Image 1 (cartoon, rainbow, N blue to C red):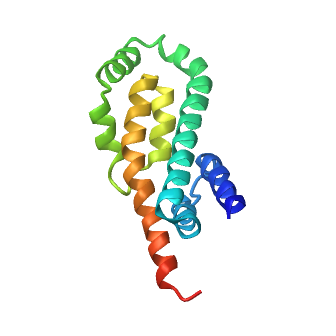
Image 2: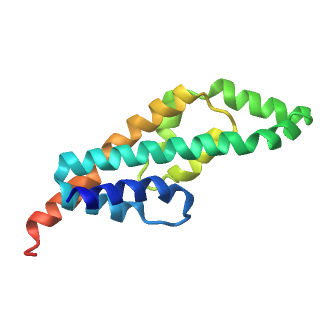
Amino acid sequence: MWYYLFLILLSLIAQIFIPGFPKETLMILAGAIGGVFVGGMINLIGLLIGAQLAYEVSRLWSTPILKKVEQNKKALKIRQKIESQATIIGLILIRLPPNAPNDLISFTCGAIKIPRKTFFISNLVTAIPYSIAFAFLGATGNSVLPF
């Protein structure tokens, strides 16, 4: 059981770099294997590490591009305005809808240099219900199905 949960955790972390990868399927599977609590924790840890990794990679790779953007005064003003007005509540509202492109949001937050603390807190708050909901779905399906 723990072997499968570890593989799911690694897959949830890596899925951030695979466009279109169905992470929800893995999250349901984690709930079916580990139950609501363990599956939810695996989901939460995987989502948090994956999103933070995307944020850090994007932040690292976007630095040369942003140096060129700083040469354009209008683009620099827009970037500074976005960075100064980025709030935890704003990011939560963007990330919370079920169909929100959270992977893309993680990369974008790193690229435009949203503060790490703001990004992490908003990511944590939105990942908790997402993780529990899919783990619950998997655990419930596992208890209802005869196999």
